[in-house]
Length: 457
Image 1 (cartoon, helix red, strand yellow):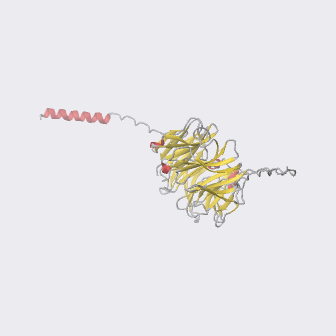
Image 2 (image 1 turned 30 degrees about the vertical axis):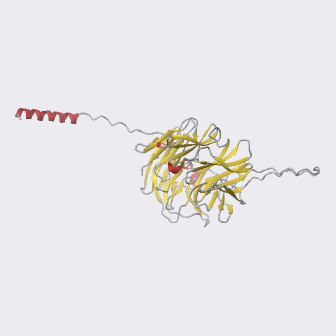
Image 3 (image 1 turned 60 degrees about the vertical axis):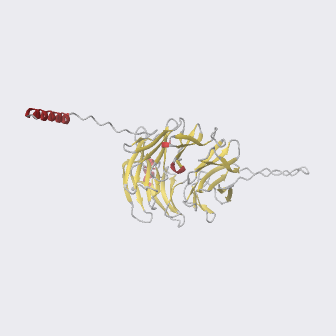
């Protein structure tokens, strides 16, 4: 190789090298942000599926998505044109839509009003309690989710009811709590009936109290008459105890199914049971409204010992971890008095994690301030399988408050905001059976979506 060629080659390589170094690097594209109807998903959070819900359908408040058929289908409870409908989303990426239950139309097992619904523990059966149009009757409808058809009635109860609450105790038994509407006394029998005239018909007495319905085989019902007015029930993990949460016409109660007894529960109603302890059958946490200031507090109570304890003032969000520890949203400095005096004064949002039998409390800051009035609207969905809490909470913003979805991992001791957006409509969420995925249904009748994400941690 000639010396001149070698020098020329070196100069060419040097020039190429210099041009490469000096050439400006194109800017990186901004990260793509996924969005639901009302929320922006934080960059880096894995979105497994997102499906728009039908136009005009609004997710029902207090009805988290139902994980059915071992997680292969997700049920969304919503309202459209004043009627309840349950939609099922299955298939690849949960994109195949069908109607699981409805009050009207061809997809209704019978036309009427759905007053309660519950999925079986294995997610293979959906039960609905329906009052048929124009009838004084309550029908229990079962739908086998792998069979064809809208389902069929397995049991009927004559009469009108002010409260209907339905829960599965196991895959074969439904606990149905009924409070019959007060009926006027029947008119007195005539004293001058014609000889040979048939006696007047005795009106049917509506069922009342707790009904245990066995759905296997021919089906049967075992009434359990209790001297307490029924309201919505929350059952312990093995179905030994139940708490009637109370309403405007019935106080909160405690039921012991082993002894077939009930008693009034010492709390202002209505309360909301948040979780039952995995450590024992008798302990639970509940939110009780504070009527004077329209706030709430979280309490723990043990039905065996009768011991109760304030967990968090100015909050209504708490749960049990898989070990039996309590995780609660609030602020350590809040008290019932300070909440009543300053309900709109911002405080640091904190998570408290502690064993109820130990004095030590582990506090975690969530990094933002919010008033007790917004803490009260917060919720926690807990996955015991992975020990993660999905927290819906709120922070002040203009023109409307900001909704935040935060996932806290107990094993990793880390919190991560996975979604945020204006607090428009509702957002309800639930964990998949193995606790890896989180389903969120959010929005209103204008625009709503079902989103499945895999949170970090």
